[in-house]
Length: 280
Image (tube, rainbow, N blue to C red; front, side, top):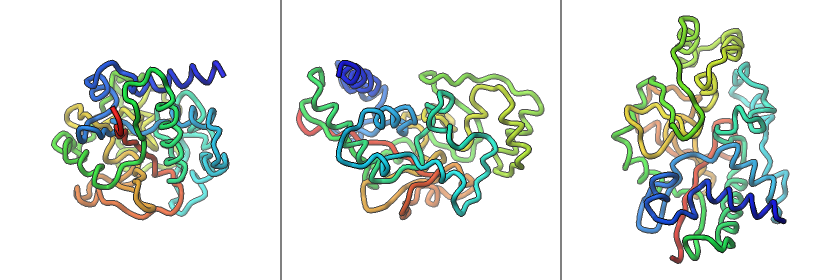
C-alpha cells in the first residue's frame, strides 16, 4: 500500500498537478485552452502508461488494456522494424519517453479515468475535483490554432527539450547520409540496422516515433508533436486526429491535421490528455 501511495504522489507530481500555483501547472506540463480546461503539452509516454498498467486494479480486463506489440509487424503497412525489437519498445528505458502506441481508445479512456481517481483521492491536490479525458476534436483544433505559427512541418531541423534526456551532437558523414534516408522515409533494412548500431543519443530514437518532448518546429512551441509524431485518439466515436511518423510531411496543413476513423490499435496511434477543472 505504501508503494502505491508513493507512486501516486510521484506520478501526480510529474504532471505538476499538485503545483502550488496555476503558472507552474500551465507552463510545465499543460497548456490552457480555457479558464478550466488544459491540454497536456506532450503525448502520454511509455513510462506513464506502464505506471498505469502496474497499479491499475479496476474492472477493465488487463488484456484489453495491454499494449499490442504484435501490431508492429502484423498489419497491412508492412512496417520496417529493423531498428528495434518490437517487444522492447514499451518496456525498456531507452524508449520510456517515447509515446505509447498500440493501445485502444478504450484503454486510453481507462487511463484517463484511473488518473482522475488518483488525483481526486490525493489529499494534497490543488483542485477539489478534476476530470482527465481525451480531447474533443474542437479542443485539439483549438490547441493547434494557438501554436500553429510556431509549427513548420517542412523543416527537418531536430530539436529536443532540455526537460528530457535527449542530447544533441554533430553527426559524421555516414550518419548524416543515413539520417537523410530516414527522413525521406526510403530506408532499406540494411540502413536501419546501421542506424541501430550508431550510438547517438536520440536521432536514432526518432524512429519510428520521436520522444514525447521532441519537436521539429522553428521555435520551441508550447505544445509538442501535434503534427507528425503519432496520430492521437479523440474522445468522440472511434476518431483519431493529425498525421503520424508514417506520413510524409509534404502534404497540406489541412491534410496533416485531419481527423479519421480508427477501429483498432496501431503503431501509428497514441494519445494526449485534457485536464478539466470541475471544482476549484
